[in-house]
Image 1 (cartoon, rainbow, N blue to C red):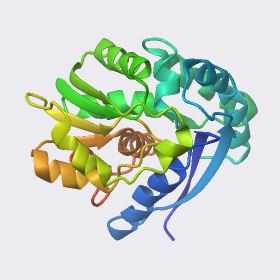
Image 2 (image 1 turned 45 degrees about the vertical axis):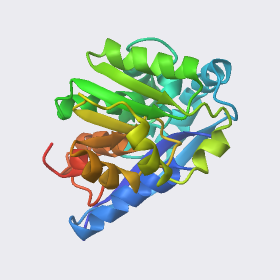
Image 3 (image 1 turned 90 degrees about the horizontal axis):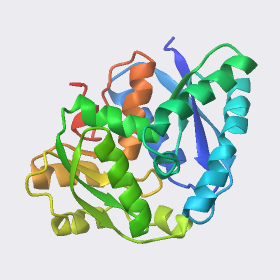
Amino acid sequence: MPRAFRIGQIVPSSNITMETEIPAMLLARHEVAPERFTFHSSRMRLTKVTKEQLEAMDRDSDRCAAELSDARVDVMGYACLVAIMSMGRGYHRASEKRLQDVARLNHPPTHVVSSAGALVEGLSALKAKRIAIITPYMKPLTQLVKDYIESEGFEVLDAMSLEIADNIVVGERDPNALIELYPKLNSSGADTIIVSACVQMPSLQAIPAVEALSGRPVISAAACTVYAMLKKLNLPTRVPNAGALLSGNY
């Protein structure tokens, strides 16, 4: 009988995407791999994507980690990229360690990833150097994300801000709209495109389409989170129709 892995997510209360895209990618593996997955979430309050609300939400992540550890999840993901990146350079390392310590104090250790750390890991796996990104954030938050990514050793050639403050509105966007936005992104000279540097902005269907148009690897924060989770679980990093990073070659 195939093993079933429990996937935990620490999710902003207004996030309506990570509990659809993460399961969609992992369930798509049923076509190519025997493992099975169940999905479990704990939520932290967030309605508007502002630095103040993000900081308050981040303080609640410890409670979520403890709750998920009650379910003995095999891996838990902190599903808010900008919350981590707005807290200062390199913060994903401190956050992941703290949440792992919280889980360890409650029950036997579990693996912890963050979407912010996963994005850095995904870019590193692709050996990316120069990138272009699309975010739904207001420009000051996009600048924080750009600075964070560059502090990890990557050059951001262009960062498009859609300037949507309401997190629900971000989650209700048509992922195919990113295909139409891509030509407006200045990606000349970029070796990798981040079509959604936000786990709330739907992008899964757009990833293979923009890869076909651009001829370059295309990733999203959500796809990178799945990649990091699979790596932590020592499983092949292969998901059909989810882009080069999840082709199984990295």
